[in-house]
Length: 277
Image 1 (tube, rainbow, N blue to C red):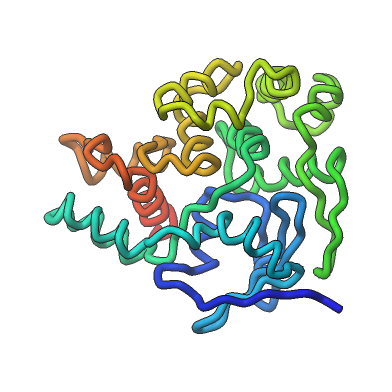
Image 2 (cartoon, rainbow, N blue to C red):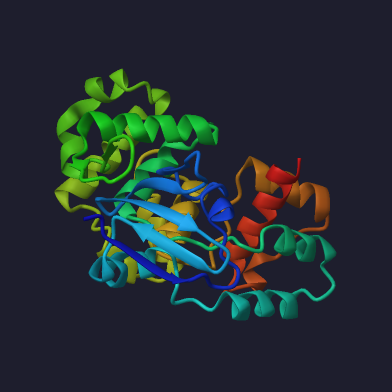
């Protein structure tokens, strides 16, 4: 019997926006408009109805231990949005972006996989990032039990990736990112970087620790801090966000004035500019 769990769809929650705003690369939309994929070694389908979300392939235990946190269901997004509007009451661009991306919710993703995914994201587009992450997972990850059509594989551990070595990584066509991924894997596998331990550090120290990995600059470190550690004070600036800031905020945009919501603001602006076009 296929297990499933359902919950009332929260306000400001839309699967299309959540899985298509550039933060996650493991879930894809199916012909029935559900999203199928894998996180934390669990393959599931997310189904969105008017007032209900159903997770197929999960039970109540999985929901409490994995999916409630993963989907940030413990965060009051109405309160976050009100805080943004109170901080920038005259910012019409941001108001429009918030309306356009109202259903965006920041996921809490696996630290190691997120680190590798955003190393891969450098000078890359979303479809290509998805395919490379999937290729690494299919080749070296573990197959998960699934009720969906198709197979799903967990992202290989740091120990496994370190063991693979540079030559095998090159065969996966990740290009110039090979030494960066290998350095990350080696440092995490050896314990030189403890991804759980650095999560207890203040954000500036967390970013510094992540940037000690070869090829990880402020943008990648900020993405990892935001999408894996939930650091909403981070404001990753990629090509799209830089374009938004130059276009709409030529006099500058002080994200440090939004210590509790900067990362969410970044996602609203990113999604607004990228998909509105």
